[in-house]
Picture 1 (spheres, rainbow, N blue to C red):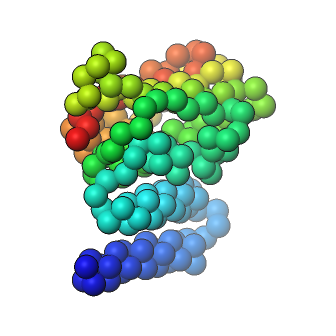
Picture 2 (picture 1 turned 30 degrees about the horizontal axis):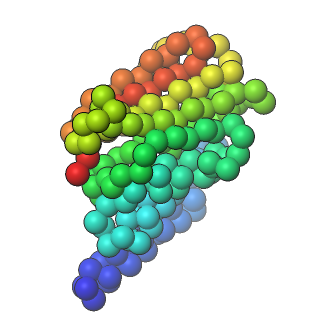
Length: 190
């Protein structure tokens, strides 16, 4: 327990050091600087959540709440969240948290949260409503500017479409509908 605690402390210090190096080393006008720092902060918050449970995983409600907090959280009136609580593995918790950070960042820059009227609906349920070994998750944006597919796939899209599916051992899909972005994934739960 002492060694695990020390390792956790060192990981947190390493993430803080990487963030400080980026802030001090990269000029303010560096393209991608804020996105990089935001991703390090999201990773750090995810680690905080997992540390609280000794890396045994986290409840999905806690993961979603922590991930969307910077974008208005669950208590605001622009992000609606629903779904049954269940435990996610540490690997799945971390991957889902990073994906939600990317989706939230994009919603603020280009999507539903970039104006005053947009909303995000986040929901999940067990596949078919009864099979408790697989979870279906959905993020849907509405009321924002008209959406069109991106011209190129950046880090965030790659993270969401490929890395997330691999890390979660599941399936992912991002739809760029004119009415808003929809992200869907399904993955096994313990």
